[in-house]
Length: 357
Image (cartoon, rainbow, N blue to C red):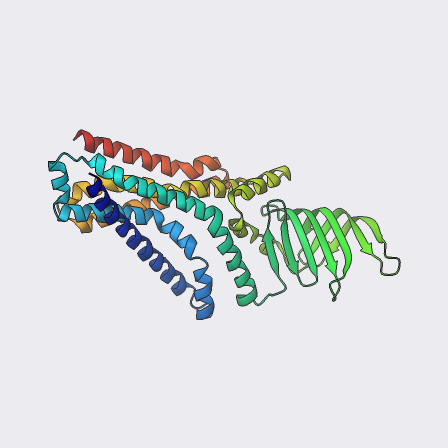
């Protein structure tokens, strides 16, 4: 059994690697083609390269499904599957060789989302602003407790930004001179956009006098801050959440809740990182009943069509549930895990039927 297990494991791993690379290449090609008119070709290649790890995480579920179908199709075509049955090796024993490989891939996917993807997203964001948008003065960094910006002669941080009300909660602005000397520091609890700038309310301004060398603090009820960035620019923060690790994202969500900002969309992002990582395992389980029953008839084309249909239905339901979670229709946990639970239950039922048959 050890020799057979090694043989099946190597065959499955080759198919998994082939499917993963093939789907990633297809994903990359589609991304380049759709954005070819928006960027220069060399910029687009580098920009897409930073997205490659994310692409591999996204295509991992269909890759696991395709690898399962291709492996059982190959075993059936050479009558090796029948030979296994004839010597008393059950389908359960064969599956027990494949599932640990898929589970390891799920764990790698989760680690990649926590460790690798945030670093690549940060590099992608810097390349976008500095090389594509030609804004070397602009810098955005999302931390667990603050969101930092740099634009022209100002460096400022936000505690939270509410995209629904388009208001900033907790803002600090460092105003610098041309030689990067600190001239003034502004603090305010709330900032509201007025169409051309931001109205700061209930804050204080700390000016640094060159003559005396002492800071002068002046409280204010209202003050207008003129910066280039408006609500549309700050809504980019939601995309920049991808650069946070899981533990930092948890603290960032807690910080938003403390400020009274609706954090449902952030909670959905958090739970989806876990659910997305373990979708390949469910996809593999789903593929087994269809691929085994059909491959005995030698119909690989039909198996692949079924695999594509399962992938489409799964992703459609997954996307819908995530949208419902972000809108507050269902809880974030339910939004992220409902499709996985539903399709996992379906896979369990189909596998039990196969075993009884």
